[in-house]
Image (cartoon, rainbow, N blue to C red):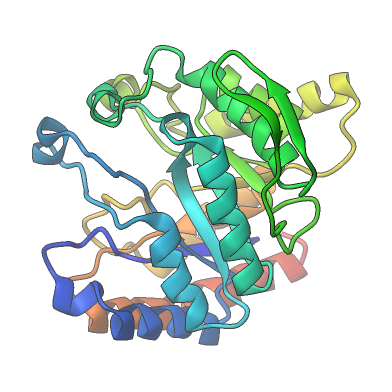
Length: 313
């Protein structure tokens, strides 16, 4: 299993601790030095006030944030987890992704989602009810844009009568695209058009709030991974599908750091179910605590999980 570690750049209330280049560089370099595979940031250009008041968060522009992390490192992968493509123009997204991938030497992982805050779509002038269809068309168009060839495209939402965008991404044919969401449409989109699937733990009222299916237990996740594999078999997909799951105890909203043994056991269960990547976040009051968490995670968790995998558990 590989790991993508949260960069807490939504912490706008603590700019001296987190929102400056020395801070980003120190955190990203700590991750790279600890052998963590990737860092991730979130996306909310126009968060709704009511959502913020009920526990939502701010975010830096993901491409700007990851560019700073890229400049401070050489191997750390740069993960948008996730960027909402349904309220962005596909040409602009494709340009940002290609630019970051070229300048970082091919380190982008493009985690994408359709979004769920209707008020955010309204503020951005984007259609909310059609966001799934817009997302599908955006993925199709971006893949054509990244060829570096002239694009002729006649879609429902986007048109191109001969447009070319270069440079192409460093990764060929493009950076891996991982689709977020727990529902059937997200699974189908991941299997049919993308490189990975990014489910996340959610239950009850929160499931309705973020407009996706519940995933409460490893068994819930296992059933959906089986569903994805069966769909892949039915369409003749032979290339692997990465599954990047947030551990149940390590979401961005986690209030305390769990015991190492519980995390290792949880990650082992996820790996057994078919998870190939894990996106993890720990609570931290300041940058010192963040760096301590990185060191602790590498020593107590990553080494143990890798040891279990080597031992065939």
